[in-house]
Image 1 (spheres, rainbow, N blue to C red):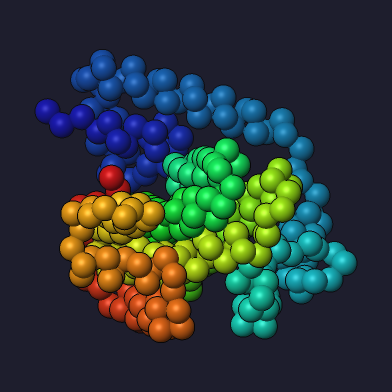
Image 2 (cartoon, helix red, strand yellow):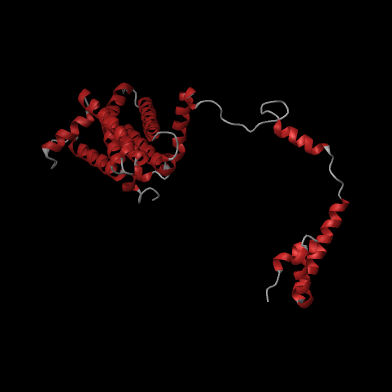
Length: 308
């Protein structure tokens, strides 16, 4: 037996007519279960009808007023349109660039800032406690390393959870990468300058300009190398290379006895800590090449690392 369950609401409300109504009536006469459901639907329909009958009808002008509000031109005093961004983004490039730059702060993981701050602060403390004449050498070993490690941690593809979302936005990947690099280097250099000024105030007689020159020179090629390897390959390569160059420099600094390093390694490391125009130009070329190649990298190579 087929029960007309889906027809009972319309039957109870009186909307079922003709052969359909006659078939339901005949079925209810021999089916107590459906008859009970039909009585319940009839009681519901009666209650709804009685309740709506007691509600006063709306004013005839209410529908006219609603239509008038919907037809009003946005921007007039009668309505408050939904706020929208109407200005062309291209007409405010500086504002947009500043917004992209500042938003990177929330996307860079906190260990990056913590490690860089710890290295710079530790270097400043060691420089303050070191014998006279060694402060520049200590800062030249710590501030560039802090910058290189921060660049690797902030700009590497593997450690960028928002990479997939950023790729879907209209902002070009190169712009995001440039903002990330600019923010990290600006923060690191600023921290280095503050540490240098504090060190100069605590140890009278030391020249701030000489201390800044000592660490800013090697910061450029070391950060460029770390940036290129982290973006084009993976952050671990940038970190490992930066640490290896730092260790080679530490072993070769102030040593008169052989350190076990080959002359070729020393010839590679020493110019990084005393960079001339050729080394600085090469560092700039490495950064520019990295920016040109970064959007062309196959994303699948890093897919398994993005959300790690």
